[in-house]
Structures are given as structure tokens and as C-alpha cells.
Length: 483
Image 1 (cartoon, rainbow, N blue to C red):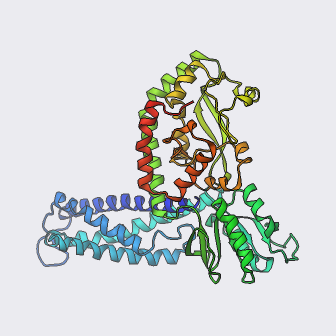
Image 2 (cartoon, helix red, strand yellow; image 1 turned 90 degrees about the vertical axis):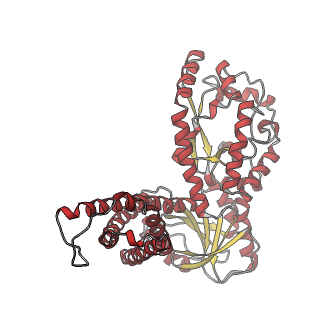
């Protein structure tokens, strides 16, 4: 789900703000503690400046963080990070700073702590925090936009409409690569007669609306956006159904209503009010927390399992000549390919030997599994039974190619043999474990496996992820369904 990247960047920005607020508060407090050495009189009343308790003011820091981060969120300083204008950011930061300062006072007043608060610190800290937050946020936005310019985490979009309607939007997107949206091409209505080339633009015509189902299978499309207002209901429903079937987000002008597809939401697409229809989870904040869980838990796992990695690597080398790790091309989110890593559990030329064993396949559907696979080494049999061979995938999780929980990433050749409804499992980032892993793994037939993955997507929540992670532990320890 590409939208999860934007949610993750919001979370990262909020975490950065927390660090900035803590540092600026401590700096302002240290300056206030040291102030009597250089300035004797109170700035607000004609009396000698008194010392302040650093410990007492540090105890107020949680209230400061709650008020400020809440204000920053309320005044939308985390919205549109990839395309916010400087004047918009400045106005939002001024509002958020004012709200944060007032919110801090309200919380401290409720806690009956205002009498202990240093007034010079209260007025000095917001000024320092404003400058620091604005500076760091500008650096964050610049880094984010540069990331998009390099093509990282971009959102692939197919525009449906004629050239006259699509041209202004495409031109705007191509002039602003920092927005993180890449137009793969345009799909024309059946009645359109435009040429494929339009002067000044690099986009191309991919086909007609009848070609869209095939294009969604062949291209890594995150979203289909319909321009124009002259669409008949039948065409709209056909396009919406094609997108829903593969889990691709479908957006269109908000005037078109009455489509019966998965989840509808009113949103904005680069200045255009649109209705979005998505058959995948849309809770961006929860998805951001899911990504944060992936980062934290995979990092901890890689550190804690270092001894296991070393011992396994030595055993693999002693048992059979060849590489320690096995990298295989897998299909990820919407068909994006990546290299998934495992500890090598088979002989070095296992892929070449598979053709001879196809008749022994014990799984139905486009996957290959057999209990007594002769390609598996002695050490390989043990690490497969204990799932140790899967441990290197924590690196894929840390890189963002996989998640801890999600449908298992298939081989592209397997995806090519999927039935159409089965392709929707690619609409969520693949994972190390999912419902299939805790329901018997290789003891489950292929179509049931596919339905379990779609069940996970349709019912996804953070609680479900935690539940599946907890259920995976005994399955791994007992080796249930492993081959």
C-alpha cells in the first residue's frame, strides 16, 4: 500500500519534532538556570532574578510534548509534506507554536503547576522551539522531496481520459517530481481519437479502456485516476471493478456517485476533489504504526539473532559448498520485484534440478512443495523444520520490502498463473508470517491459502498483526506444516 509511505513520513516527522522539542526545552532550561550568573534582575518585575529548579521543570516536559505535538498535528503541519509551500508551512508553524504554548499552560494549570513555572522560560522556549522546528521541518521536507525526485517510494498512476482533460494534470505532475507521483501513461476512452504523442510531454497512451484489466496485471500500478465528466455508468463500473479485483486504488471526479466498490473516501488529488475507492486498508496512522513496528522488531531480531546467524552460516559452509544465503526474485507490493533472502537450505544448483521433480509436487496451484525434496541438504532440512532459513528476511523487513505480517511473497512465474481474483493478495506488502503460516502452512491447499490472504487484507488491524505474531511462535517451535 503506497499510501502507507506518506503515513510513515508523518510519523517520522512527528518523532523528529519530539526530539527537537526535548532538545530545545533542555537547552532553554539550561540557559534559564545559568541566567542569574549573567543577569541579576527579573525581566518582568523589578526584583532580583530567582534560581529555578531544573528537576521540577523537567517533570513538566511530558505536558509540553503532549501540548506541542497535539498542536502541530491539529494545525496540519504534517499534511502535504511533499508539496507544502513555504508560506503555508510558516503560517501553520506560527499557529502550532501559539497553540502549543497555550496548550502547555492549560495542562499545567490543570495540574496546578503554573505557580512553579519560570516565566522567562515559558516565553523563551516557544521562540527557540519555533525556529528549531521550522528549520528541521524544512530540512525534512527537502530530504523527502529529494527522495521522490530520485524515484524512491513514488506512487505509480495511470490516468484514464482524453488528452484535453488529462493534459493539465499530467503536465503539473511531470513539472513537480518532488510530489512523488509518476504517471505511467494514459488510457483513452473507446471513442477518443487523439494521437499518442502530445508536444511537450513525455507520457504515452497505453491503450483504451478495454485494455485496462490487462494493463493492471502487467504494470506496477498503485492508483487509477479518471479525468473528465463524460463517462457512462457501465464504463465507470467496469473500470472500478477491475481496480477493486486487484486491490488497486481507483479515484475519479467527485461528481460520480453510486459505484458499489469496496471502501469510498473523499479526498484530494493534487488540487482536485475526488472520490477514492480502495479494497485495501486505509487507516494511514495505523499503517504507519505497523511500519514502525516492523523497523523496531526487525532491528531487535537482527541484533538478538546474530549468534544464530553465525552458527548457521558455519554449518551451511561445512555441510555443502556454495553460498550461505539464497536470494530469489519475488513479487512484492502490486507486483514490484525484489530479492528475498534466505539461508541456503538446498544444493547450489537446486533451481536447475526443479524441472525434473515437477511430477512430485505435493501442492496444487502454481507453487512447488514436496516432503522429501532430494535437493535439500542435511543442515537445510533442520533449518527448514525450525524456520531458521527464513531469518534473513528480517533484513527485507527492515529495508521496507516486506513486513513482519502479510501475504507471503510469490515468485513472478507463479503470479503469472494466478487466477484474477488471486492477484489482489499483491495489494498489501508481503510478510514473513500470515494466516497461512498459523493454519498449517503446506498442509493447506492453494486456493484456501489465497482466500486466507484476502481474509487478512479485508480484516486487517494492528491487533490482528499482534495476534498472528503471537500465534507464529508456537507454530515455529513445533515445526507445524514445515517442509
